Image 1: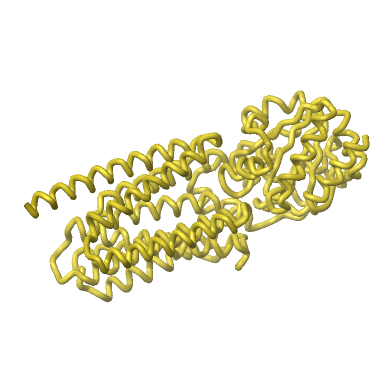
Image 2: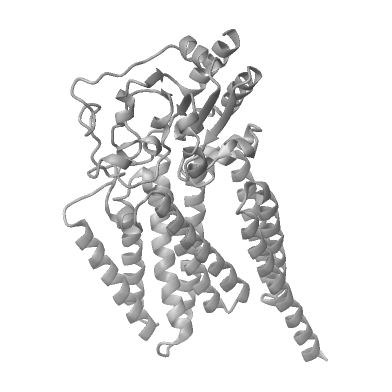
Length: 470
């Protein structure tokens, strides 16, 4: 009778895991579109609740363990809910990096405890999974911590390089591999375990140090994939089907996102990881493609506002500067003022605009700007030839024609928004300082370009007033 009851409970738990896994996949599918993203998040959250409940019932029937697990879930849920509500959109990459680090560290810690509990024996599937989880989780934890510090400006966001850096990284990788083999073969070897953990942590730090801020979203996505793999390996260690499924989905989606982001920047993953783009910024007059003695033309908000008011078609290209200034509501006011005068207005969104994929879409959705007005790179590039004015707000690298024409540029080959094909280009910038890639933009010196210097939010507010007064 008792055995039958246990068997029935296990069947119920397995069915619950199957339902949870299905909801995870449906949730990921929902995240593919801005319109279904909210529903996708909710679907995946329901799947997570089912998975946690099934784990508490099926894997940890002990009353004391259940209480501890429930307390941990409640504390984690409160921290997650408060973070999600209070963290600004501009700080979202830091938040993702922090969550990556926590996930990787947790997976590694569980695996370390499992190894410490081992009393002997040779290499088995469980011991191989343990060392994989220890190493990958520790690398993800340390790398995510450095990514967080760079994005939060606790340390310089520029690449940190030194002589023989790649040789040092290769030696660290060899130390990690050697430690993994030693621990897998002799799980009671505490010295080998200590070397493995230390080498993995140092490798995680060394791996992220030479990567600049412009490439950090790709690195965070890669670390997310690492965390997924570490969690999946931990699932084998603790014999949890749902942990294996969840970790695999995170690892696969992180890997695909990393590939897509590298393609959007027109660069290989190896180039992103090892090229140290942004480490040698050039001065305003030192870039290729800028004629000697070229000058920059600046305008007033009144002049530019009048020009916008009498245009037929305007395309707005938002960048990280708009996000930092929290100017999404002000740009919405400008759109409505222009539309009130019969001007056709749309947005050109580069795949890596801002600091994370979809960053700009979410930011503009906060201001109730319809999705239909948000055009991706290909769609926007088809429109610039017939556009009267392009308004670039806080973007530089994603509209830099050097990506098309200067083979020596670090952004050469990156698909860009061809704003230089429009009749007039207006840049809203604080200064002539280059963007994340650290390269100057020849378009600043083009006769068709007008600069409006100042804070993006204040400049947009002045343009709104000028358009209404025109």
